Image (cartoon, rainbow, N blue to C red; front, top):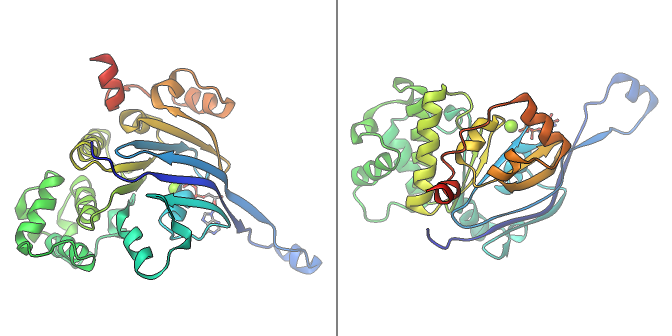
Length: 281
Ligand SMILES: Nc1ncnc2c1ncn2[C@@H]1O[C@H](COP(=O)(O)OP(=O)(O)O)[C@@H](O)[C@H]1O
Ligand SMILES: [Mg+2]
C-alpha cells in the first residue's frame, strides 16, 4: 500500500431551506431550514476503505458532494494532504478536484451516450493531462485493463454494455483522471447481487493495486460488510457511530445502528474486508 494523502473532515455541516408552504408566506414566516449534514467529522487514511451507511435521506450524498466541493458547506473543514481544501481556488482547486473523483449510482451521469468508451476515457485523461506521451489507444487499454474489460470495449458505446460493464467504464473514466481518493456513491446499489460482488472485489483490488483511498457510500449493509475496513453510520445528518466494520456490526453501540442491523439481519459475509482477511488467515 502506498502512503497517499490523508483526508480529514471536521465539523462539516449543511442545511437546506425547506420549501415554504403558502401558510408560511401568508404569515411571513421565515423559511425553515433543516440540517442535511450536521457536524460530521472523520478521517480517511491512505489506502483505506471507509463505508458510509445509513438510511435514505440521512445525508450521505450531501456529505460526499461537500467533500468534492459540488456542494458548499455551511461550516466545517476539509483537509486533504494537510491542505485546507476550502481555502483553495483556481489551479490548486482544480488539482485537488482531480485527486478526488466520484463514481455515481447511474453511470450515465458521467458517460455521454454518444461517445465511445475509448473517447470517454481519453477525454477524462486529456482534460487533466494524465495521458502524457502515451499512445491514446494504449492509455485507454491500460484503464480498461484496470477494470477487467477487454481493450476492444473502447469501440463500444455505453448503451451496448450491460449495467455492470457500464459501471466498470465509469470507474475506468474516474481512474483516468488520476485520483488518490474515490468516492463511490451507491455505485453498486442498482446492480444484481452477483454483479455487485464482482464490482466490490474490483474496488478491493484497485485499492490494493493503486493504493486508492475509497469512501464507499451504500444504504445496503451487506455491501458495506464486503468492502469497508471501517464504517460510519449516519442518521439524520449525523455520524452516530464509527469504527472497524466487523466490530460495529458484531457489537453496535448506538441505538440507531442496532435498529438498522435488526432490519438487515444478515450483513455477513464479512469476508472481503482485507483487515479481516489478515486476522483470520
Ligand atoms: N439540493 C437539495 N435541496 C434541498 N434539500 C436537499 C438537497 N439535497 C439533499 N437534500 C435533503 O437533504 C437530506 C439528505 O439527503 P441526501 O444527502 O441525499 O441523503 P442520502 O444520500 O443519505 O439519501 C434529505 O432530507 C434531502 O431531502
Ligand atoms: Mg444518496
